[in-house]
Image (cartoon, rainbow, N blue to C red; front, top):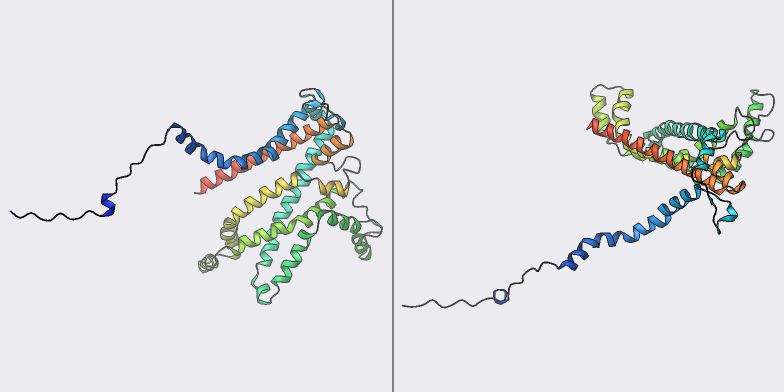
Length: 326
């Protein structure tokens, strides 16, 4: 009986099968720890540049310590700085100024004006007339101006005798004599609000303009074909699609403005008297002018806590609306 010849084995069949060995205990530990080791440099940077300064500031707030006593340390007083801060009428004034005038007023005006100017810049007429580059350049001028230069220019414009604002009002016959805008309590906050809005408005305009230009034109055409008026189109098409941009802009501008020190300090240094002091200027004055570093650190902790509470409430509200709409 004839036998069939054996077929030769290929190199792959001759090679011994490789078995996957399970990693040992040490190997499993390295595999599990590898993601954390890769994240370790970033975590160390966050700790040393963000978490540790916050913890150190909180430790300082529990001490009675001067700026010249940092080397030898201060006296531990517990929550005495916080009790004094809560009982101080100046704290209530600075908290009100920070929340209402510096934050709510300027952020609200920037959002309203930003929506209007972004809508104007999104007009097809500017593109048709090739004026978009000029409009964007004019909008960006305040944003590229350093805050120190912006405040100096505005202080000169608001000068009671030589300022351009008072000269225009005098020429129009609206006033009989120059108004000291940065000295009178009835006008000083409006002047600060005008400076902040003028300097920070371009960021809001450019961000909202990018959001408007990302909305498909087909949605507008479909809404108009269905008979929707321009107001309904803006309300039911533009604003809902701009909502993610508005959420981010509102949060960023609120945080930046609430913690801002430059505008009030360079404009009035908290004056007249203590009328325009905000939390940032109060913290600076207590820590570096009155040399009460512990008390100034307590004011800084108050700023951080109030901003944290705002962020939590803001995110919870936004996420609840997003879940309800989905």
